[in-house]
Image (tube, rainbow, N blue to C red; front, side, top):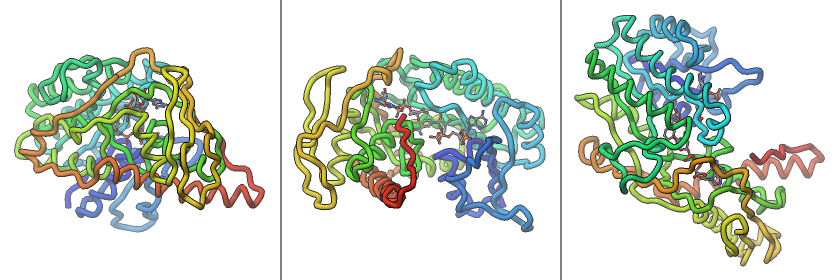
Length: 370
Ligand code: NDP
Ligand code: GDR
């Protein structure tokens, strides 16, 4: 039985990957941070009572900023595969916590690689590094492929650039099986609530159900190559099964502006929007509603721009070229953007119906929209 260690097991990708590897028969070890509240919502369905023997899913306390913790865990587990997914992954927040981001996302990756080397596991343990399309940053070339030069535009991307190159360096210097997956944006119903897609699908559901008035966003012109996280975590595993360790772009090859993601989300619940104005004055109004479940007034303003969500330096356009992964690994995504929006909207409508029920029962519901 193969053993895998997943750092960031409580995050979006960590949760889907844990489930995927358990189904493949792996013993899965996940790193989780101590927090003052439970932070395992996304993996609670996989939880196994620690008093039961021969568990297949085991969580360990740890942190990417703690070398001794990582060395001890890797020594105890002796993993065949490590998926290094843990990171402070929010681009805008990285401008506010640049030093911590460098430590967790950049040096954290070095700590994992160095632990494997120190423990003499170079020939046993394969390592996947969660690299990102944010490395491309300022547009140099489109579409972006494995050979496109990097130009990072945030403390997050700069930290991930260190992680990218230290992974390549350990592969070349010590013959380690260490790979970068350069993954473009991938989303899902369990995406963090402050990333733009989930912020939009949650707000759309809340607005339709009368729980929220308006959605505030930043740059509506930014374009992203959005895929479904379920398709992308499968590729993480395939990357570590290849004969040779290499770096891979995983993307859909299509790009869409944030504005259109908003339009598609509202359309999914039968609400047609009209956008008016430009730049910081751009707004969206309800043009039509053909869903009898929703009592939304025609002409209602449902979206406005708030410059507080603008980034000091923005990544304007991302569009990936996944040809290498398609040709050599057989990468075929199952979801397109329409399927992704549908999946996220269906899930958020159900979630917000629960809130609506609680509100009707007189309970206070969460009103935090960041
Ligand atoms: P999430 O933000 O959902 O999850 C990040 C995970 O890292 C969480 O489990 C989080 O723990 C954990 N974590 C954060 N800081 C630390 C730390 N110091 N020590 C230990 N654990 C920590 O990210 P995703 O699942 O979306 O992404 C997974 C990885 O892939 C990240 O590295 C991200 O940067 C990268 N990536 C993501 C893309 C995407 O579109 N989703 C695209 C390309 C790359 P907690 O739950 O306690 O917060
Ligand atoms: P990104 O994702 O920065 O691409 O990083 P995010 O969803 O945060 O932003 C995408 C684009 O939308 C614009 N935007 C807004 N973004 C947020 N979060 N909130 C808003 O209100 C808003 N309004 C407009 C942003 O300016 C940006 O252009 C994600 C993360 O998962 C990274 O960890 C990962 O590496 C990359 O994707 C690939």
